[in-house]
Length: 88
Image (tube, rainbow, N blue to C red):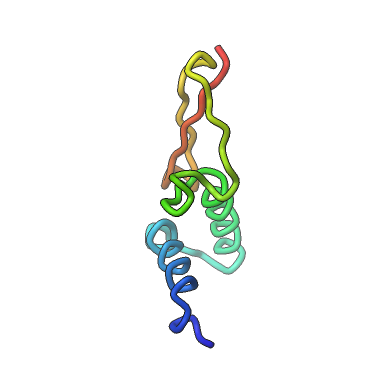
């Protein structure tokens, strides 16, 4: 079975390409591995998924509004961002 006959693999490869690889210049294999490692961490811990009710594969806890102000964190060198509340 090739990747072209598996819609799940095609979807994942397309997502990786659109969200990540189309926006960076890969220097060598080690650089590619580091980029993909960082992307997969972002993908599993912060990127929302429609099939998971806009949650992540590693579910996030709901952060109460009284926990503090919202802070932006960069992922993948600023290509993506996620937001968290921090204690005051």
